[in-house]
Length: 258
Ligand code: NDP
Image (cartoon, rainbow, N blue to C red; front, side, top):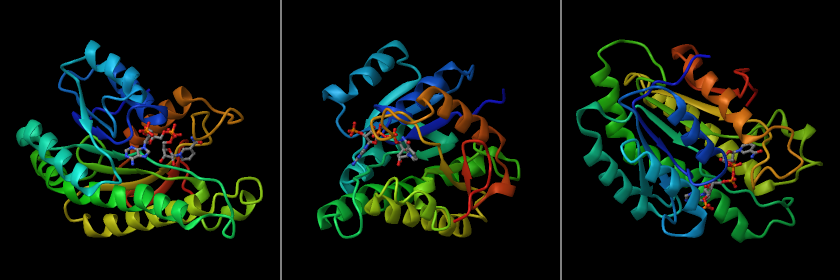
């Protein structure tokens, strides 16, 4: 199976769920110069224990970075720290993975949940993109070859089919998550705008739906486990070129309607 060979990777929300699984699978690929910057909002808390164990075993590959996507100062600080470690090769792959979901319809969702979804699922990825952009540009320039790929310089926004305006009607009665739906649609728009703005930089931008997965967010009834989802997402990422720039894809590589 093709593998993501990006040297320098940043993943937000890397302490559990799909983010942690992505760290694990990237470790399995033989890539001697790999550096994984694993973002976590509470590196000393119990929810980071597994990631810390992993970082202890692979100190030359994993760097745990304090990164709360709800806190612009934390994002800026993290970018300074990561930037100082990256050097001239820059950041090849940025995965905006951290996300929150609160159930509820338009009428039952409290304003507080709307703010939380917007801050975490829209403002967080947006500020992360802006703060890490200089390092993505450095990586794109350092590559020396034209074209786009996740190994060269890419922004991958982990979105959801529940953010698809076209697909939502078939899901909404089963999974009403109004704040999540609206926020992931917003993240999709960020992906499209980023693709337009960073095209000349040759930074690949895509939104990916990882499938319905049995994480804390996806719940026990989900038909796919994290291992399979991440395997398939990484396989899709390894094959992306400028053809998919600005697209919305699922874990099989199929293009989804907005
Ligand atoms: P989980 O709930 O299992 O994990 C969410 C991760 O996001 C945790 O690491 C959590 O950290 C982190 N996070 C939440 N808020 C913040 C914050 N403010 N700052 C930094 N990190 C934060 O979810 P999944 O792993 O399932 O989801 C990962 C991504 O995949 C999300 O964007 C989600 O929307 C998307 N997705 C998931 C699907 C599924 O079925 N599971 C389906 C479609 C999309 P902490 O431990 O500190 O809370």
